Amino acid sequence: MTTPVEERPTDAAPPVVAVMVVHEPGEWFAEVLASLAAQDYPDVRLVAFLTSTTDAAVIQHIHGQFPHALVRQVEGNPGFGPVANQVTSVVEGSDGFFLFLHDDVALRSDAVSQLVEEAFRSNAAVIGPKLVEWDSPDVLQHVGLDADRAGYLVDVVDPGERDQEQHDAVRDTFALPSACLLVRNDVFRDIGGFAAQIPFLGEELDICWRVHLLGARVMVNPAAVVRHRGGFSVRANVIGGEARAERHRVRTVVSCTSLSRLPVVLLRLLVQALADTVLGLFNGRYRRGLAALRAIGALVVDVPAVAARRRTLKPLRRVPGSEVIGLQLRSLTTCLHLSRGQASTNKRCTSILKTCFQMAPWHRRSQRY
Image (cartoon, rainbow, N blue to C red; front, side, top):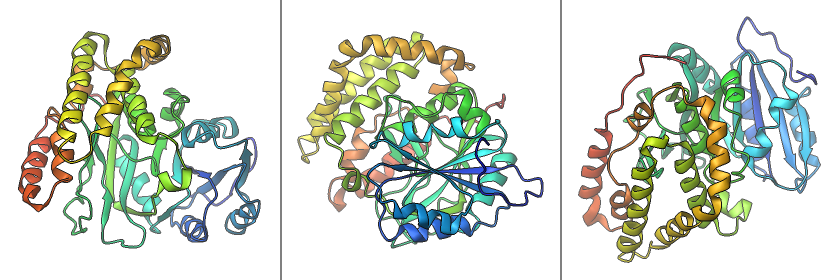
């Protein structure tokens, strides 16, 4: 590293550089730092990036737990992905892992060890933990994210679902929340890090899709448990969050889909947005559909940016597009979102739809990155 970070005996363990983007944290931040310092993994180092509006006293808290941590302040609040990308300029070499963290996650003491061990065991390029509610650790938040061919992310768990070890199998997944993400250092550099044009909302779909283009594995290991506060929309005060998320989703889909499948995917995007709008009229959730329609219309303006993005992704396309498509859900997710928003009479419909989604043709790749 160009600047010394936390130094510990390695016992031949590959280094894990925790990359934390800190933005105006609350009193709970002390618990976040303590949980990272308490990891039983022998070589965890910390690089923290503080937004300019973050109190300078936070630096003292960080150095209290990690005396040799590298702390950098950034101008304004450029967003999680663009800020996290700066780690490649302060960390030399491509060995080990980056552990990307939001500033509101508390890791169980063996979380890093569990993630690293499974990354080696399964030859995973990206791996994430089981995320549970901060104040109710027995309530599941995320255990990996599935995605359909229009880029809509689908949670494996239902809102408020209790953790009874029903999702504790290690599995391949299409995407993972960026709240806690272990990424191989060399893979992160190969794919160019997080998308610079996505400051908030949508970075997890984009980065994981590009990892799939390499033919590498994205996995979730529920044995690693992390508590997550969430509440991003309240803390970040993102204006027009839904519209921004839809535009990022549409641009990611159009940029990452293979050229031969692009016409069909464009049609799917339009049909699904229309369905979202019409069906959303029945439960007041039509705004997402309207935002998606506007995002599709904005592609006319975005053509130069999308074309440039596709050119940068061309060297990453190391597996056939059909293989990436095979990792996605076949069915529309609109019905699932709507059924989750209805009363208890729709619970059976939700269960049936989830079962159908989980029957999508997932497969382990014969070629490992």
